[in-house]
Image (cartoon, rainbow, N blue to C red):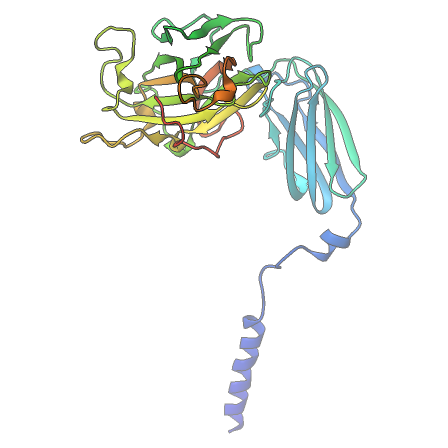
Length: 360
């Protein structure tokens, strides 16, 4: 009987010992909340004279005594450009906390000195340093559609709307995003939707793009202004995977965007001032139709062309949809249009409405 009791007590003890033990602590440590903060290892910056145009990077290393919210702010002394690297940890790891010279907002960093500030939430400690950019980021790591530096591409179509539309579809050099040139796309339209479109012929079949549509991005800069801004202006962006000839009937309009082709579409409403840097996942584009026999299998390797159409809500006529915009100028200027895989160049746009004003 005693042996049996001893056996039962042993089993219970083992259960209590192992069954009530947790391998991980839930929630923050007491020291992280109430403990005094201090820096164990000062900030170390590798490569303080980076040439980002040559794919060089800057790495940050630092160690603290506890987990804390930290932020690295990098500001260009001349350009005023700024980028933020932030996290919650007890260290900066130089294999993780890396800067390649990019920013998600305009203006871009230049060849200039930059002020570095490392700050900590609810702590007075601030670590400061400087670096000197010897060559700025070129944002060309991808599949460039056009940057307009060599004019308008020879195999592309520039089709401003005719008739009574005052359309401006020209290369300009007064306010480029990158380089020396950009494309002005806008004008005035009161009685219709379309001001015009540009169409680019592409072929990525030999590039062996490995990413899916979730990790394939269209990146571009769009310039507008808020002075007499047309409140109904937008661009339609179409991506075609059609196997049809680009311009089968040689009429200067690409046939690969027709309704019976494999085409994906996205609408961007333009309501800001200055340059805005935009990245869009290919998977966020919407199939344009369900024509019988058309297979929508969305493969970046099969992309054959991109169309960008400038449009605005009609402000004139018998029953205008946007009467308040009568005689207002439309401005949706473009620069640096490029596909990238795995990483977006700029801020990824997610709040997209593909239904309203469903025009081509």
